[in-house]
Length: 194
Image 1 (cartoon, rainbow, N blue to C red):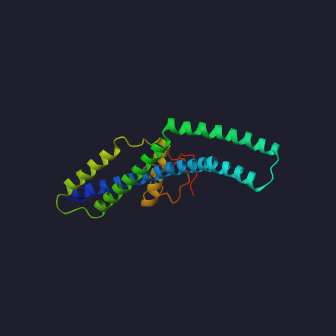
Image 2 (cartoon, rainbow, N blue to C red):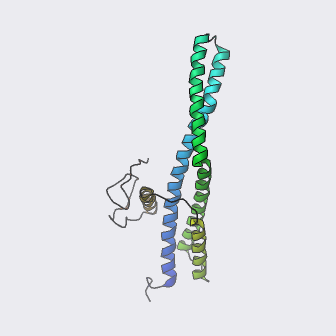
Image 3 (spheres, helix red, strand yellow):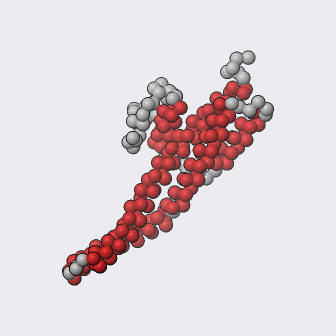
């Protein structure tokens, strides 16, 4: 029996494949969380920063009535815009999505560690049962999880391939950076990465 026919070796390779996918998905979800955090930071800055600025300006300097009227009009417009933004956040459930993405990152990271551990050294006893338990945990984690777009899947694939030093299944290139390529498996995404 060759190592390719060995059931333990087959499960070990499957574990590495699952670790690969968990790693890529966690990266994509981290990008989503990062975008939400930037939006929330800008929102908080506008909501709290502008009223504080106007208050400090009014207290610190002699502001004539016309200038204060202009600040009040601008402040009202900003207040209206932040109210609309708050409404969008509530309707779109952005904070809830942000929390769910963070939870999924933890799940993906935990599964990645467990699959990697199995891939490095599968348990000697009941290795098939151990792998099946990992698969059950992965399937449970996928219930209600975020759906990735095709572009996000390619980004996650490229990130994981770069980290694992794997060749792309289609183009055969081993990614060394996150620059997009023409490959339909590890490229064709718009986002730029550092």
